[in-house]
Length: 294
Image (cartoon, rainbow, N blue to C red; front, side, top):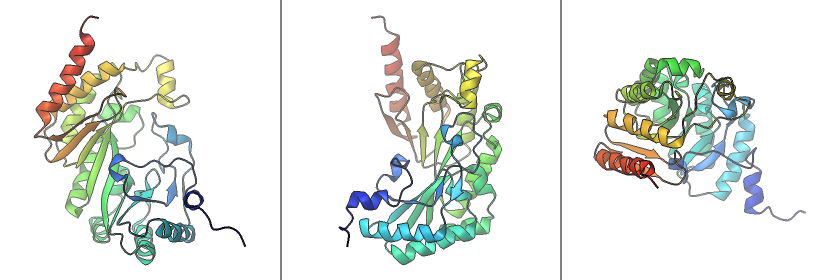
């Protein structure tokens, strides 16, 4: 008879990879792997596009749930892992919710990554049913509000489609946390990227806007565009100036704005609109300090 598994061994038994990716606002949530990879796999900037997409069989999801229940018996919120598990059909998502209720009855809320078109493929009735079942939040990479940039990056949705998806979530009572990528337009379209992204977000009600700096991963289409001279990557201070412009144009309410990555050594975080001026002052201070001689 073998020795009882350690907690570390139990955790390793329920995740495919050593590293799991979970948004900062879900760090206290339990993490249940239900899919691997992204169903779209075409975004020009994304390193995950190289990974195959597959759904974890429900029997395996249930096995992992039994282990997770042993590890986190008091957990009340689960984050469903996968690059966009909300692409699953509603029946499958509800089946997973049933398994969660069976093995982790204290869980009241589910969250996960999603694409805007995953939302658009579901009817208002399906979204309402998922909300009633406990789907409380989706984390959506909107990246940009400029259709030209979205097209070049092969995002697969337009700004208007993103707005429509987020409005459907509003109607269903599902919160959404969005990420944008300062610098995604390159130096050529920096101002357009900032202004159009703010304009798009002003038509929605995100709980959180998270700015993630652009990284050019070798082998991605955007990396090849840059190598060929068709995309000019901006430096971190240029990106911060672009972010300042976007922030000035933002008119969202009851929304946490944060940047944890553009300069790597600073975190910029505050509520909009109440702390907008403090955020702008902090960014301006950083930009002026960088520009000062010596």
